[in-house]
Image (cartoon, rainbow, N blue to C red):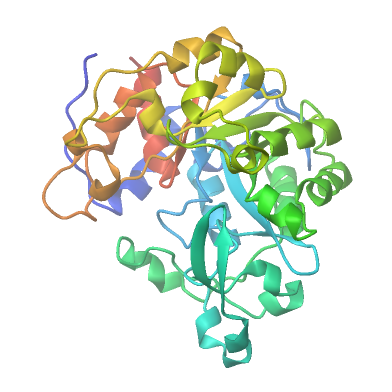
Length: 386
């Protein structure tokens, strides 16, 4: 493949460049998330196959610029032009679905600063991993709403700490209302990408997420096969359960090749992700999902030094089964990029993210999750222009 040479831009210069980049595509930045032909108004309708390719998914919003899973992060992702904005869902003690990457909220809220919740600190095993901290399932929604969101990785993103305490933890229903409002403003639906987190763990607590999620999707008109929303989970049985409840499009997330989905571990299913990306596994996934969300390493593995090697056949094999591919996650900082696209010695400085995106887009993937959606949009425009 031929890659374009780029000079590494400044951290904030990319924000301004995104506006120019979306204008070059003939669309204002705010319109990128909802293009013509996808229906109008709130929940709206839009075909999964009509999404731009490559689709740019705002990973937890615009988490490269704002604390993740806040309305501020979601709004910025939309304003920067992300085609879809992602939410991860976990339940509260009283059964509400809230937007957090994990149910452990120790590092994403100011809960440790609340003496009234000191006795809620606990040690738990979640999907085979032990954590000590504070967890959403031990709080009512009213209690969670007294907390404020904070930056999860302040060492990598110190600028984001400026916004610590600015937003509360949003409920998924609040996000649906926000999306409906923004959809009416734009005249086209706002696409959402919604993940059920640790569903087997929560089901054992009587807090299974699929049924309350389905009720909300029906209430807000996002339960049809052409709804402007994609459901996702690392647990295939959660996706199957959702398929029985709603017709909303579905994606199965895939981690490293040696890993096993936690629902497989619990049920004794011996298959690994390496089995699921083989033709037989992809055929099975295609029986209840419209796509897969693999880690980027399943698209192009890295060698021992962290440099990209030869692409696998996963894109070709998945497309042969009619599956879309939305791999995760593209980030601008050196520490998150393949070694051959890092620039300089500062792990938190921006590397050659455009070159990295070009390498992944050249494989034929249908989209990508990005912490900095403006950068990914510029890279997608470069790819489309080649």
